[in-house]
Length: 577
Image 1 (cartoon, rainbow, N blue to C red):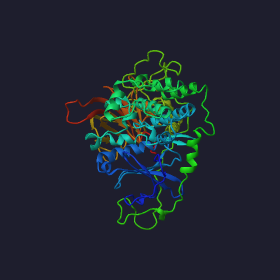
Image 2 (spheres, rainbow, N blue to C red):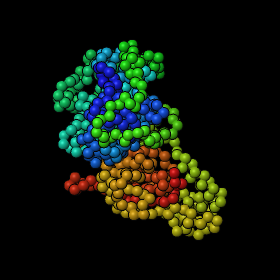
Image 3 (cartoon, rainbow, N blue to C red):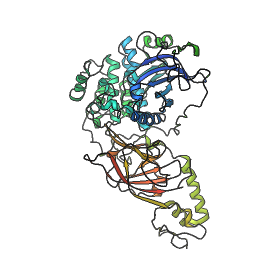
Image 4 (cartoon, helix red, strand yellow):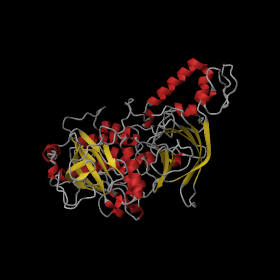
């Protein structure tokens, strides 16, 4: 939020709005490639940073659509080292989002004013950013624009901001006309070359941020953007001036091959090893004295007086009418489930072995740098997401199943759970075969089991989604609920913000029972992870369970991007949330 020199909090100018949404603006914090940032306060007096998107982006409908998606995903990110998104508006005259305000300078401004940071500070900085990225990746996001100006140095540790928002601009007319999203000096080789971007791209950017913090300049030097990007793709950085404790860490992160870059927990381990500690312990003052002294001196919040704003003479399109602003509830952030112990990464590498030998190639379709350890389960699963516990709705299902066991016997309960049209020959009840192929007892009619509803050859174009509660299963574009498909220059993916998705293993039996019991939940699946016959379970908040079987996708010669699925639906399979 710091501008790097002069006052951190700048007065509003005549072309600045006096208010955005329900937030009266108190000061201007700065501007960047996607918009201007302002200081405001919640009705309870908590400071927030409000980013208002540039008019060029606001005029692009595709940007607004993607912005809404990415902000909803960003609201699921909660971590000690991130500044959470707490409110947003993608439909107004100018899109905006509000995040928690972090009191402290950006890494870029701190280095510009005070020079490179000492090694102990850099190690704590890198470990903190790695923890922040774990929270970002757990929400199914890739930051895509990690750089020194997106890292804030608070008194109690670093904070990462703007995670995932850069993706919103990737498919707009601006990028089509040649505008580059991201900062060239901190891009990964695959991002610079226009190839598929995975979570490993953030690891490369983290290595560059570490080099910048320790050297005071980018690892690949300065100069015209095209020259810097060429060096990133084709040349190795000169790290000879880097302190010896940091060189193995930075070198591993800056590997050209995404599959050989370390995992985020390994980066934390390498920081621990470089600091000669089994656990990094942040001292009371982790920042250099000059940087720490700047925080209370230059980043003390100005008194909030609504009349201090300088409203324009004519009504501003973002300004509310005169009079007090109505107090409305802000968007409710996603509250993650309780932590389940350490992150579920099971790497084949360790901090001691990185760079000492060949690294196994990435598994087909898996995120490039997530290597599978023996016995670690689904190789296509995001390891962090594997730790999410079962949601309460499925506890209710378990209770219902238990009641069925008591009332109707084991046979009736199994019939109700399977619901997939398969006969269970192990039923001990004496009932006749049901319409779904199982057997039923006289005390539990087969009508209580959800009936499978099959839809063949459902075509889903890019930019559309399916709502499984609809009677007619067809692509729609209103709000991207349940299951969407989207493509941009970085590739195609499936996702949802209100539905739990599970990518089943090859050979795993796709059924209602499987979709209810498998808890490897994600909200984003890259298209390369699917092949003919791949199956995806979807559990919606409206009680519908869907099993999607991938059949084919569009070819390069087709006029549009699309995919085709066979879809089996079980309505009222789980209690509506």
